Length: 240
Image (cartoon, rainbow, N blue to C red; front, top):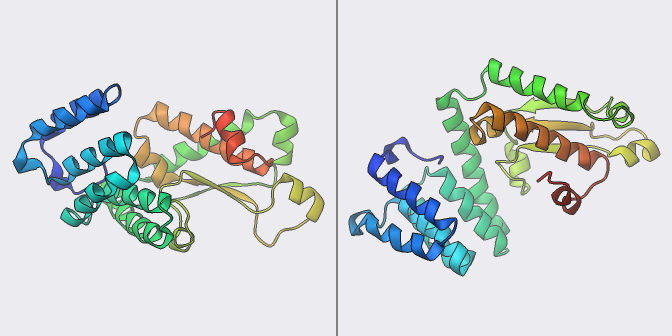
């Protein structure tokens, strides 16, 4: 979780690990097990988030909302709680509130990643080289049409983009004219490019093998956008 380091509590961590494992098959039993945290921990931010996730599974996001609000009130720097709260606002059609939470998530994630040393030159080199390998593995007829679509690395989405409603924890972005647009309309005022948000990738996938796999999925997802695939197509192809 991306939250204050003061949350560290081995006993609570063990309990939550057990609760989350139980929840995979039996959310109701997981909720009961969470009660073993005791009344003194009922308002602990991580317990509130865990309970909120279970309530979401059992009753839906609106019923879960108060738990995430209480977690944020108790720990304003708890980025994960804010992120899920933003998702709930979005599902409820409260776009301004969603954006407000996401802007805070962006700020908090940037500070956390800086403190953790995420995004070193070695990290970025690994991501760039993996991206090149993925592009090189695309069939030649498609690779040739990607010749003028650079893959660039940025730490995370910019504030202006998030303010427009973009996910602050997105892993990638395609922007500019797609393949059809380039062939029919010519030059576009917005340069066509694929962006990999390296800090988000590294924070979400600390394991090297998982990171490599996710870079491939993200690249192919954005390449799919270039060739005109929509989100339903991406899901069907396993590129979500």
